[in-house]
Image (tube, rainbow, N blue to C red; front, side):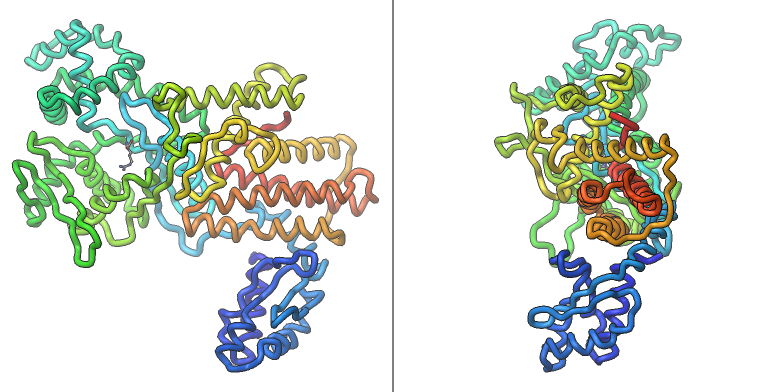
Length: 591
Ligand code: ARG
């Protein structure tokens, strides 16, 4: 079922072709002047130039071709040769009925489904998630949902950061502080069996949170300290028992906290694989890369050079094996490509990671292509900007530290509760339900504030604005959806039945045209990996609904009109909820 814009576009393109003009110039767009027309085509101007004719003449010839089309109630030529189209009420009614009856609400599926992996979130052991991971999680979750809804076979993977230098740093730091742990680690490393591992249970997330930043700072300043961390990393990677068992403890305590944060955010992964999961592939991979002649020795390290003709600047090589013999961030990424190729055979892997890692991915992708592990175009990094403070720099707390994701979620929830109370919403609901609603309002606030911008754009963290029930915000959209839900509940209680749509009022026409635009928004979001196209659609839809609701009484209308409007309201609600769901936002039943 094609949308009206596309169907009419095809008719206009055929008319262009019939008069000898390039058909693609017949493209139609929603009208700039909705008071005058529904769609327009500006192609007569370009066609006139190509054919050496007068644009109005072209437009008139096209209009004559379209004249008999029963879907159009008016075809007018405006200004120098713009073709304005008005859709017949009956055609809009048919389209509304089709959307209302469609479980997909008018959205198409892709012609050929692909296998797609979305690598997003990117949490790390021991490093609590901060606002940077917020964007990776929010954008990636939405892209995963959009791809899946369009019909692709999609797997979302967290790609847990658990195998690099930061592990060596942390193991060293914990051993320096906790002597009981240190003693057990050393005995295990020495090959002693039957150790009591109870000491490890005392290591908790608070220790890791506290120790990691200190260790990271010291590693930068103190070369001996750094060298020791590197040695520990190398020993961990060959699974030296003491380090390995302590590392397992780090992983476990971190994962619990991460899962709590992701759950609170409505983010969930199909796969929770980590860098360490490809550990067994690294040695054979290095041997193979070597056999293929790709590895170059570089001061004790082994690298792959990735420079290409035409590069504007010199990209550093991929560091495959460090001089200590360890696998690096890029090594595990390369091995993960191999692993995914074998396990899933993706047509496309989308890496949803901070724009500042663009070079890293370019280097890894080039190396993967050289090694024959991936084809050009199969791996794609989609970067995003930062969430900034009012000073225009990446957001920091008042004390100048990074805000932990968990604290940010809590802060937003508190604000959501406040907003709900201010607006007198949810007051009469049981406390547990109120809490659930506040959680949903908070998630909607954070996610919509993020996703309404094109991902490449940075934006300013402004909790007051994000949580407002007015303006272009997540809470506003939830409120609109809940309003429609309560209207439909009331209608059901009064026994009012929905029936066939028959549009006549301008606000009804406008609502149907907006519903019709869902597929185009979804397609754009999919093609450009840009959920903001859907966020925009959700906002327009709720505005169109608001105008419709203000202009077109439902419950007091005559039965046939009421039935038609109930169908429209139901379709609008379902499409809005679907669009929000594709953004990763859940709608409460009431407020
Ligand atoms: N853990 C990384 C970080 O925090 C992000 C991982 C992104 N994904 C990947 N395949 N490298 O920066």
